[in-house]
Structures are given as C-alpha cells and as structure tokens.
Length: 243
Image 1 (tube, rainbow, N blue to C red):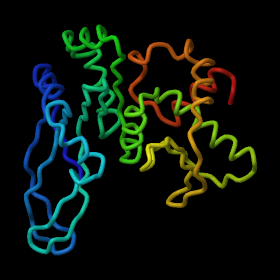
Image 2 (image 1 turned 30 degrees about the vertical axis):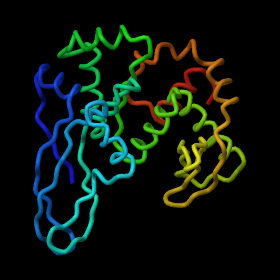
Image 3 (image 1 turned 30 degrees about the horizontal axis):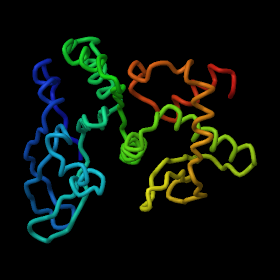
C-alpha cells in the first residue's frame, strides 16, 4: 500500500532533509482484516536516527505485525532516505515524483538555494537518486555504502547482461544486481524473475577500467540525473556507439 503526500513548501522540504519524520496510519491485516496502527517514515535521517540504518536494511521498518492475529506483512510507502555521514539521499517512490523532489534540492524549480549551495561546497560529492523498486533501493544502499559510483556499476551490470545475451543464453528479462555478501565481499547476481542464473565476484579491476574509460564523459556525479538504472546505462552506452 502506498501513501502519498501533497507537495510541501521549501521550508517543509528542508526540514524533511535534516530530520526523521513520521506519521501514524491504520493498516488492515490481509489475514484477519483487523486494523492496527503503523508508523510510516516520510523521511529518514541516519545521522539523527542511527538505529534506523539497520532497520531499513533488514526490512523490519516496513513490517506490520497485526495486533489481533500476529500475522506480518510488508507495508510499501514512499520515503526519502538520507545518509548524511556518507553524502547520499535516495528517494523511494514514483520516479517522476522522486526526480522532481531531488531536482528541487539541486536548486531547480522551487529551489532550496541554501541546501544546493551546501551540497556544492562538500569535498565529497553529494549523490541524489530516485528509485521505484525495493530491490533497486537495496542495491543503491550496497553501492553507496561501498563508496562506489552507481553509474559505473550500472555500466558494468549492463555489460554482464549483454555478454550473457551474446553467448546465446538470454531468454529475456535478465537483470544483474550488485550486492555485498555476509562476509563483506562485493558480488553481482544475474537473475531472471525469481530465478538466480549466476553469481560472480565484482571485479574492482574492471570497475577501475570502466572509470578510466568513462569518467570524463560522465562528469561530476553531483550533476548526474537522479534516475540511474539499466535504462540509463543503455542510453549512455548507445551515445558512445557501444550498443
């Protein structure tokens, strides 16, 4: 179930950036149809609320436990995730809404000039992204927590899928996901639907080679468009005449 908010004014948005904001909603249990209260996070700031960092990653922040029968279900809702200690934000929700919200933070549209200026002054780039898929959101967490450029990761993932298709193995619907395993190793998972087609280590050497080849063409990550995904990688590589 999705919960939508009306567009906020600049000062309200600025508070959202710097604070963890919640509201209480009523959720109907899909098992027994009883109602219970549930806390929805409109925005999450991990510097202000560090305990939420792990709850976002293990999914417990989105689990509703029915007070009547105890059944658990996942509640899906849009939110802004802000990890200021690592200089990134991810807007989870409709891509169009998320992209507009993030462009506002960059000083476009209804601009937050002070915040835009603050991001430009940081020695470490501030990355803003919009996603509409829970797996994509989880993947962004893995990528940014590893200190990687998600544009380079998307290019590598696209190459993995392209090579899989070139080998005549593709049936359509293949996707690659970056993740960090329980031992802290970076890996790539190739899937088709719910089927795992293969697992491989994420070669930092190739990542560095992609960086060396495309860094100048990609430019400053702070100025990148907020939606960076498989479609973005295809578009970029087509522009380079490599697809």
